[in-house]
Every structure is written in C-alpha cells, then in structure tokens.
Picture 1 (cartoon, rainbow, N blue to C red):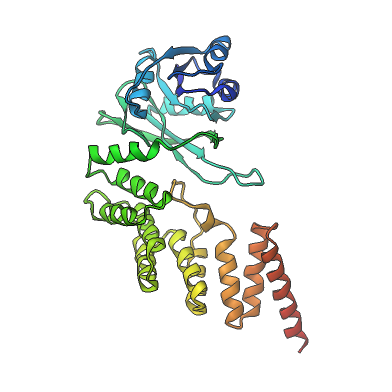
Picture 2 (picture 1 turned 30 degrees about the vertical axis):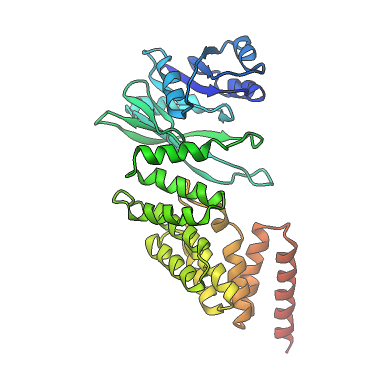
Length: 358
C-alpha cells in the first residue's frame, strides 16, 4: 500500500513541523504552495517534503486542491487530504491498511473539528477526505467536497483519527463571496444554499439570510433532515414574532425528532417564556436521545449541560425539587466552573433538605 498526504498552503510556517511529524509515515508528502512569503516552503523542503508552487486566479479552493491532487504519483493507493492545521493521530497507517485489505475506495474516520476550554474534544464527526488516487476530484469554490465518477465507490469505517487545531488569526472574509459564487454556479445545490444562508446569518444580513434559508428548504434536493432542521432553527432565531419562533422550532423538532438540537432550543424558548411544563417536556425529550451522531451538525450545546440546566429550572418551578436536584447535579458535573449552576445546585440541595425536615 502506498499513501500520499497532500495539502495546499499559504504562510503556514508554524504548522509545517507538526503536519510533517504526524504524516511522515506516508510514502509521499506534498505541499502545493500558493504564494507563501514566510519560511513555509524552505522548512518544508528541509524536512524532505515535496513542494510545488501553484497559482490560482481567481482563487477557488477546488481548483487549488485539484492542482495538488494532479501532482501526486499515479501509483499511489490512498490520498489523504490533510490541511496544514490538521494532524494524523499515531496508528493511522495501520488503520488504513485495514481499509486497503477490504478494498474500500473512501475510508471514513473520526474527525475532531474543535476543542473545549479544558482540552477535551468538542465537535466530532465522520471525516471523508481520504480517497483512492484515481476517480476523485474536488468541487465547489469553498467548502469544497470530493466527488467521484466511480459507480462502485465503497466506503467503510476505520479507527483512524484526524485532529484539527484551527488558526483563528486567519481571515475568513473570502468565504462569503466564494459561497455566493458556489450558489450561483448551481442554484439547485442544497448544501451550498445552507452554507450560504448560514454565512449571511453570521454576518447579520437578516433579510437575506431568511430568504436563503427559506430557499434552501424549498429545494427538491434538500432532503437531509438534520440540515433541514438546522435551517428551521436558524429561521427561529431570525424571527421577531414569538409565535413564528415557536412554530419554526416545532417544525425543526418534527423534521429531526431523533436529534437533540431543536429540543434544547425549544426548551430554552419555553424557559424564556416561563412556560415550565413545556420547558421540562422539551428538555427531557432532548435527554431521552442518548446516541450522539457523528455528523457536523451535531452541536455541542445540545450534548453539554444546557438540557440538564433547563430541565432543573423547569422542574423546580413546577415544584419537583427532587428532579431539580437530579438534573442540577448533572449540569454541574458537565460544567463545573459555571458559578450560576453551582449556586442553583446549592439552592436545590437546601430546598431538598428543608423539605425533608418538615
């Protein structure tokens, strides 16, 4: 089995060494440099990494990645697209050997996108950027994806892990125009419509975001329930009218009833409205979902302390101190540094003691 690890780079000096150390067991390492002005290229060459210089104007991520992919030797079995701020975790090659023996063309693996303040993993989902050398290419100006012309693509899960350590100092300003370009190139593409709507939301372009989320939901291809539910949750946040907010959140729950996110946001909505019975029901519905999906739309807030906190607050206001104590204890376990949660738990505990002494 021959493995290539490849990437595109622009002024990535601080990431070159850790990238290399994690990937050096590969048979071929390639950095396609797009115009670095720091020491990225010289350090990479010192380490023995193959470096090519590419120029992509106007800039598109798919064109850059396809240029780097085209430069890989044709006898490579597996290509790993590993960004400069990502690292392969020890044991990756042995896991990839398993996929090779099975004849899989696109092995799947666990990808950790970000990290909590205590250093534990945050968002994790199934990665899909390992592929065979032939039959694949990159598509879309930004948030690019691998597409294949193979009718016999075979996917399977292995124990390989890739960790992402983002460089938050880098500007993402180019994403908005590139996403707009992606939408214009294919108005029927539901994934790009969702990403563009979300970017508009992040940039506080309220009316345009509403229009694009609604357009996303109207597309015939927009059939994936978690993404549809996410659009509905964003629409709820964008509504001024309380009834509209509630209706969009209820639609999101109906769209993806096996996901926590909409239930937690609905519980928060009822908390703010002081509708305690509905708040408790929504929070407990969220907590009844115990299998955490390995998808990028699995949001950490839904799997942390929040549903327990809302359940505790609702239970207390409904006069169920025992439930409040149980849920409050769990909320503190999941977020022990939050003073409000500690104070609430102390209050629930005292209330329980007082009730037992009556």
